[in-house]
Length: 139
Image 1 (cartoon, helix red, strand yellow):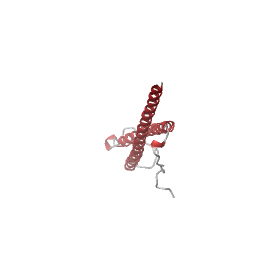
Image 2 (tube, one colour; image 1 turned 30 degrees about the vertical axis):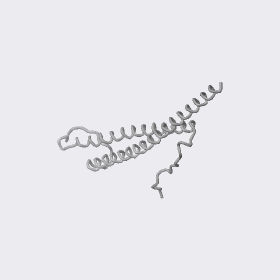
Image 3 (spheres, one colour; image 1 turned 90 degrees about the vertical axis):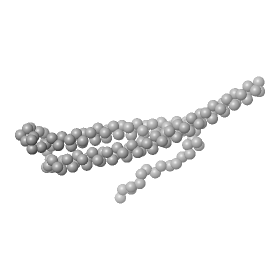
Image 4 (cartoon, one colour; image 1 turned 60 degrees about the horizontal axis):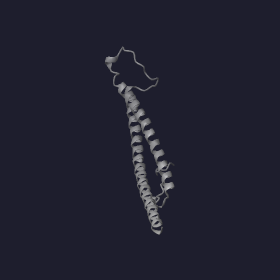
């Protein structure tokens, strides 16, 4: 029996991660987002091909009788072929929507990671400046 649950995500307090850990997390998110973009591009091409194939079926009318056409070697008629391509376009569109949703979630996480990295970097700079000021005051 297949589980309907998505992957279990562990919540992590980003402020407790070090800068190197945050950098590694950001790089991982960047890679995942690249995979999502590549997947969306591939699905978009498939969606267009199915749409084009379905559109081609619209040209098969009684007026086209006697003209040569290429026909796939299947037992389906035009109506079932139209239904097939419509279902494929709908399926691919659903998959694209799922990937877009995941991509938006990953982008939000990446933005949060970048915000925490900036906050930690600024805090580190302030500590260095304070240390430099204290050292200068002692001299």
